[in-house]
Every structure is written in C-alpha cells, then in structure tokens.
Amino acid sequence: TLAERTNLAGVRHILLVLSGKGGVGKSTISTELALALRSAGKRVGILDVDLCGPSIPRMLRVQDSAVHQCDSGWVPVFVGQDKAIALMSIGFLLERPDDAVVWRGPKKNALIKQFVTDVAWGDLDFLIVDTPPGTSDEHISTVEALRPYQLLGAILVTTPQ
Image (cartoon, rainbow, N blue to C red; front, top):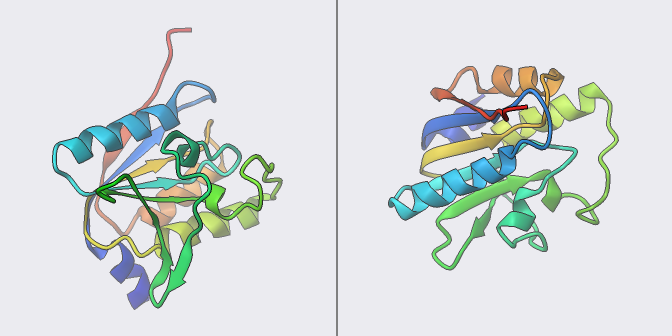
C-alpha cells in the first residue's frame, strides 16, 4: 500500500543488528552505533524489535515516554536534547517496562510487520533494527517486512566463547 512505501521512503539505509544468542550486546551495539552516527551529523532511527527484552528505551533514558498516533502511523520517541535519534520500541507499548511479553508467533510477527510499516520515521540517513536473540521466526518476519526496502546490511554480534 501507499502508507507502507511512504513511512520508509525517507530512510536511506537500513542496518540489522543480529546474533545467534542472547546477552552478547546487540542493544548496546545498536545504541552506540546510533549515537556515533548522530555525532557524525546523521539522522538516525532505532527500531527495537526485541520483543522480550526491549532495553534500548532504558539505555537512552526515555523509558517513561509514550508513543502517539498520527495520520501516517506511530510517531517515534525522539531522543536527546537535539531530538536527533528517533526510537520505536515495544517497551513504549507495555504498561510496565519490565512486563514480560508472552505472545505466540503470529502475534509477534504481526507486531513486527506493523513496526516496519506503521512508524512515521520521516527523513533518516540510517535506521538501525535491533533484533531479538537467536534465529527465530521474528528474524524471518523482520527481513520479509523489510525486503521491499533498501537493506544496507547486517551487523552480526558475536562473543569469543
């Protein structure tokens, strides 16, 4: 649909941050990468699709923020004094940020698709997608939903053990 094309139309590059397991620092890498790109003068968005552990809102100290709706979908939370990082996370949709998300596959996949298509990102140089740990259905859903767009690549986070 037109809305799908419109919401990511202003995003120049999309980067996935992945790993085969949890606890390796994907969210930290995503956050640090966003901050580094912002300090280099880039317009950056982070899409936190880690549905079971949405830690980026806390890392960027915006965990108490709420997302709002506009005509073209959800308005992301803008981070920092200069509002240079746009962030969308399931953490903003939970009543309490520490609530566990216990959902079956179809509901998770529908939310990921909605996150990809229904967030009004505006013009961004980079959209960083922080994925859940592992190699689950959610990764396939994310890549499928992003397939029509310009995927720059992926960063695979590993540890020596």
